[in-house]
Length: 205
Length: 138
Image 1 (tube, chains in turn purple, red):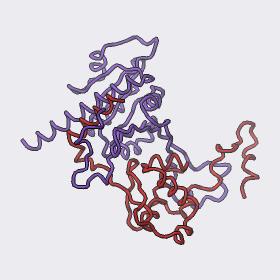
Image 2 (cartoon, chains in turn green, red):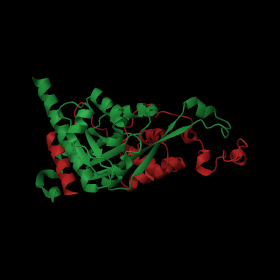
Image 3 (cartoon, chains in turn brown, yellow):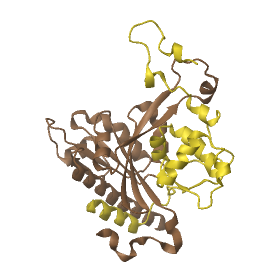
Image 4 (cartoon, chains in turn orange, red):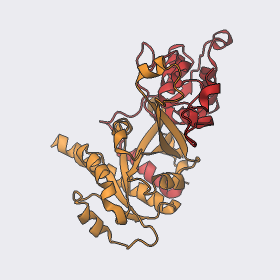
């Protein structure tokens, strides 16, 4: 097994004490299968974490509040994949609605990369996510969730329709299938590595 | 308490809120004493910051002074090193509240929190290779 390689301890001068966690975002339009994808590859049941949205003052001053709800809850799904002890991958499904964009900013901080899930019947739903990651230079792959009954398009068609930058991978997938989800993640990590190396070379040159 | 009036909002049928829909019985930030940001050290806990119990924690006397939410977070950390996001889900508390409570635990020396990878220095190739191999082996 991969874990048993002798140099895989990662314990360089005691640095092992700080476990490493990597973050991958799963974005895309409403109902495109973000939660499904997270659930398919996660080793833990998909968890939901909630962010309570409200101005602080409202909460403190709120006395009755029963006939007027002052808080909104945004739920984020997430899952985990443990690569080895001390190295794990966290997947976050981003909240779909545009008004929660500010949460994306936090989520995308330090993220390794993102998966933009797309449905060819509603391709325009993933435009905002594509724009978002392109502008922030966060490596992403587009994963086309092949719903049954949807006409299948080739990866090149999707790439052209989304006007993606050259090199941005497009993967056809089935969000319900674990192997298919794994393949999407592998493509993303490979791509993120290539982007990172290219950037390093840029700064050196 | 407000319980009596909780179901009796506007008299339009179907407009009443019951149970979880009515919102939390204890307002989330009541658990933090109204604070919305972690204490003086002003740390910003990333969702994937990992929380571990300190090797040399304060004694049981100090622990007994902690609130119930602090203690349930501490119990979760003892069971397993967890990310802030997981703690929030498992303790069933909003992330914002968990951050404040963790700030208290950090300051009083009950836990340590790992810094997430700085955005500018994503992991080196060796680690990415390891991630890819690990995913393949799943």
